[in-house]
Image (cartoon, rainbow, N blue to C red; front, side, top):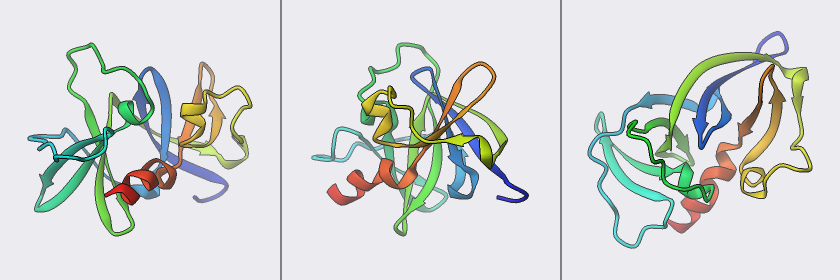
Amino acid sequence: MTDGTIEYVTAIIGGQLFGLPIARVQDVFAPQKVTRVPLAGYEVAGVLNLRGRIVTVVDLRRQLGLPVSDDDIAPMAIGIEYRGESYGMLIDVVGEVLKLDADSHEGNPINLDPRLARVAAGVHRLDAQIMIVLDVDRALGGIAMAA
């Protein structure tokens, strides 16, 4: 954050726009050869090898209680480090990097779906839609505890 602005990597999950603080994003990649992990939580899609690192792949659609995507577009993943471990967060589509004024950040609206509110760190109102700021720690906290 410089000069009162925050940069976000945007992603779409189930038609909703999310923003991840760019400082938390390590990679954006197309997941290949995800290996299912027996007895892993429902939201854990599996693990993969990304340039020599074992990465736990978390399906954000599952975690948010959204139905499986019915289109034929392969999901993308955003690489995050959380508590010294590498994670890939499966998303539908990766967007662009947005630089937004920190003053435009608002708390969660009272009518925000509880599934989204669990992982939201506020919102930014854009011209045509609301961007939910994804709280990476909350999104991965329950999964890391179960691992």
